[in-house]
Length: 108
Ligand SMILES: [Zn+2]
Image 1 (cartoon, helix red, strand yellow):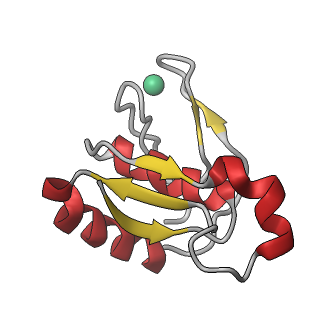
Image 2 (spheres, protein in one colour):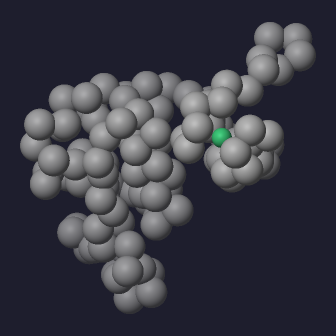
């Protein structure tokens, strides 16, 4: 596994991981379980929650994360897929579980 992303907090790291997972990769979040300790040593390198992927997926992951960073800040609330009932983060327009595509927002 190779690290492709370092999160500001566990939620951030898990968001990136679920984003990569939704794109067919196999990410793993590391260090998030240390968070309660890490809060006190946040600036220490290596204790921030991070996302790792298998070496063969690094290139794809970095490209996806690049796209991720270009996205505007997440707005709105998580939404529940009308097709399969899975809960999706607000910034995703496609269901991670079944691929249901949200209709575009009015005015876009
Ligand atoms: Zn769904």
